[in-house]
Length: 110
Image (cartoon, rainbow, N blue to C red; front, top):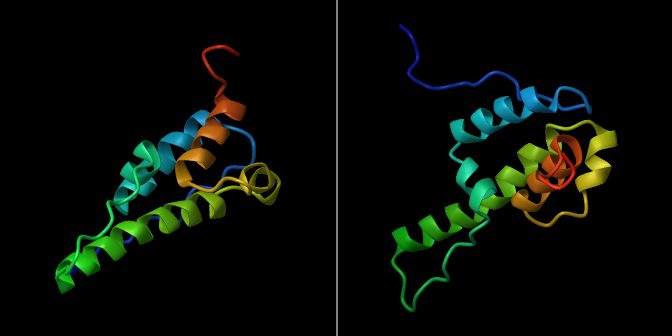
């Protein structure tokens, strides 16, 4: 009997070449784990209100953890040489934007 669980392929590793391909694969990889929105928007979870329920505490913790999971995915999906360029970034969006600026260019540099 087939399993209903989803196991994506190994994450793509970016070594400095083929950024336009890596970025599409990486976006899909992050979407598969429900992490793309964290990278794309860089919105921090709202603080918990007074007297939160257990469900609210869990949801808040999950939302906070997503930022770290997304950052881990990005950091581990680049070679060590590329990692040194994003290691000072504090959020997944900062790391993503830094990679885009350097390897895809900006409107100004194209």
